[in-house]
Length: 121
Image 1: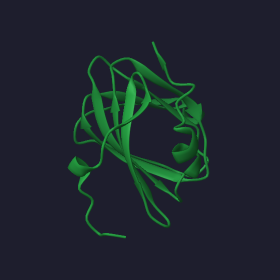
Image 2 (image 1 turned 180 degrees about the horizontal axis):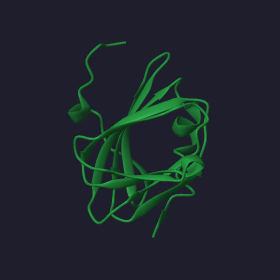
Image 3 (image 1 turned 45 degrees about the horizontal axis):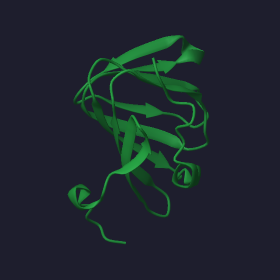
Image 4 (image 1 turned 30 degrees about the horizontal axis):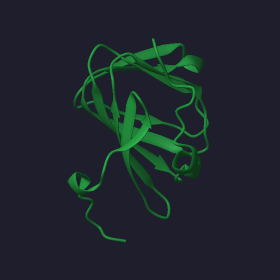
């Protein structure tokens, strides 16, 4: 595996009409560059993988329902979600570009593209 990732050379993959992505994964880590259209909402989920990310452009609200917490995240902000911690998020009024990182990799995201529950509010 090459140490350098050139995101410009990886083609965008359509997840659904409002979500596209670029995906790379290694043995113990997966990174996804996501592009979301405004007003997308991701349902509450939990998974074994730890998840972290970085917002490049746009704003999201990250919800952590077990803590009754909502965080407004924008460009330059990041997040870290522990294994099996319930979370969801919502894209606000602008397109969002963010990097999601998972360890271990979530192979179901490769196979299913996992967005059947994502919706426009």
